[in-house]
Image (tube, rainbow, N blue to C red):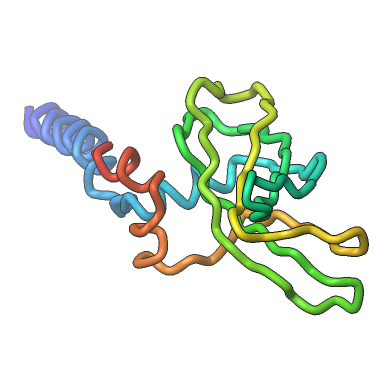
Length: 152
């Protein structure tokens, strides 16, 4: 009789552990979740040109192909756009937030980034980067953080 009671007690303890242990794991912070969602995106610059307004002020237009390889959609995605001169010197570096509303995971989309005040010359090169290793403070400052921080 003692062995049956002992076996039942062991079974109850094991079941309780199976139910409770997953909740005891390390919690994923909103910053870690945002990092993962951001890194699920692939970005490919397609074209870049300078547009001028009526006063002759330049705005750099960069067309990008964006693909979300993950399972979670982001409404916004912030990227770093850099312009380098023919000698490799950095002429401009600016974060730009892309509007990804309506872009579903697994489907690519063409989006544009506008950088007012930046002029692209013939020999300049444009790069677009999804920054990695951002600090938690930097991640909290990105527009896409608001949607991820509301998820518990």
